[in-house]
Length: 401
Image (cartoon, rainbow, N blue to C red):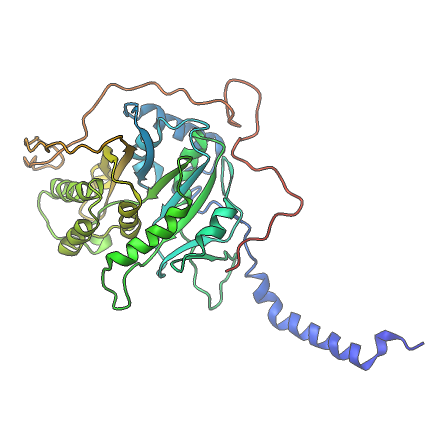
């Protein structure tokens, strides 16, 4: 019998495999597919130590001054800057969420470092934070990617070669997860990065925004909370946006609230018009425009908290990012109330300029009782985080790129 190891065809195939491995092996090893999205912002924008993160989020939730509403919460807008700057604002939106209130959370994220058309969903099984792993609703991803404006994109570790990074470097979706893990606990997510929704001529097109919203709306129901993760105006030299040089914080406040008014009134075109007129950079503009098309007519928007990094750091001439927590509640009938135009005195800059505007009314604080079930529950023995999925011997295939 002939020894197969000496067969000429076998030797030729072996040489081909060896050459392919030597030439392509290192590159492919550097581009391994990621199945669980690692925490990109842990240790920089929020604590990477689980105990510390638990305490930071818990304190922000306890200190948030948000009254409970009888109406059903259906959507929220929250900032995604570092917790030391925007965490107290974001907590206002999440304070009254409770375990079992929602089964899923759809998160519309804002890209900072990537440019792409349409909407993109990372082809992974879940997102990891120091508090555990949050699973992705894979069935929802499959349904959503049937829309021509929504695609799934694989996530790769290491060097990308000629392939541009997208989900590998974007953190806006991740930033809201610890707050959700601390409140509703057991849930899955539908993470959607909302990119460029302009037409082929790079012009604003309301119909494209409406089409994207129609595709996303397939997976919205009474058990799904919609979250838009975005900051508002980015002002200062660092952002190449400085249209005024005096009374800076007051004028940022006024411009932000003009934008917030259009968002609360679901005025898609008005939002676009004020951005075009002022040139104000907003990282999640497309996501906000999609939100205005997703919400039903019988919705009431409420600004719960507002602040700027410039006010907190004092470096508003160099860089100031605006934060707002806005909740949307479903009401039986949408009533339009006349808007108060009484001037309020604001002390937000050294010049103490008096401007017209509206500020969130302060109310009595409501004590927060965190629900049980957290791994870091101080009330008893260590437990498994309820949001962490059970291990699987063979996980299902991730959606194709």
